[in-house]
Amino acid sequence: MLSPRRATVQIATCLAVLVSLGALWHRATAQSDSISHQVTSDSGDPARLKAAAAPKGIPTEPIEVLWALGPFLYPLGLTSIVVVWFSIERMVVLRRGRVIPRPFVRRFFEHLEEGKLDPRSALKLCEESGSPISSIFAHGIRKWGKSSVEVEQAIIDGGERQVSQLRTHLRVLNGASTVAPLLGLLGTVVGMIQSFNEIATKAGMGKSEALAAGIGLALLTTAVGLMIAIPALIMYMYLSGRVDALVMEMDALAQDLVDMISAEGLAEQARSGPRTTATKPADARKAV
Image 1 (tube, one colour):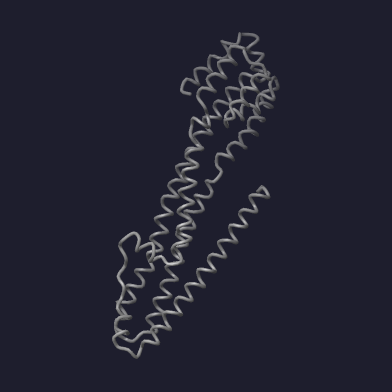
Image 2: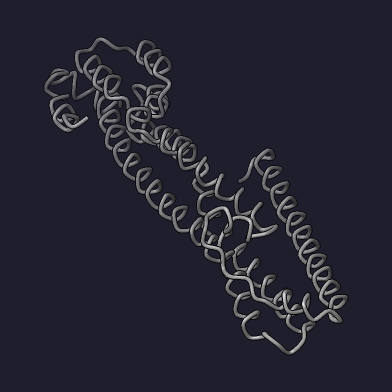
């Protein structure tokens, strides 16, 4: 269920997009009317009519391409900035050293195996770390000595919150990979409407050349939209895979914790000694 703050942000974003699209359509229509009026007024001058009928080439320089996008430069540019920003932000947040700090995990389990931690000191150690894995451990520690089912359920509840935080902003990248091609397609449609409208108001000479140049120019917005959408989709798939890998590793470590602090695990330690019981989890954490 969405929080009120998140719902407000999404509603405001949708309204901003709708207002932007309306402004773009209004500006594009006004520009088309201006071109039509200029061509009509110059119809009596052969030299000016010939210059107006000369088709413009498709730009090849990056700056020319950007200016050729017209009013669609702004939403496409904003989308590209959003993709770059959240890609970098998620790559920093999803670093393995931040989500599952190796020194903390090693020290935590070593102290736990040696019997140096009680519930209070273990909880304090987790709070000092502040990492996602320590937050998951803290939920389990609060059920110290309970049955394995209760400890595991507490860890699952805490893990769901952490996984939700890890997946934050990934939906933005997925949305950008969908919206960018649609913006490009909209720009192409508007550009083709302008081209046909301009050709319809011109004299009979050079119609095919002007139409081809106009359509080629309009297709630039679709190309730019795809250039934004493809990297956004790649980053979304890559970061989603990284989240899944981190979740699997955190799940394995959390299961080790359940085996050690649950009532069944503590009873087993009391019978066989803490080091014997902790041997298997320690071997499983050699890669950490």
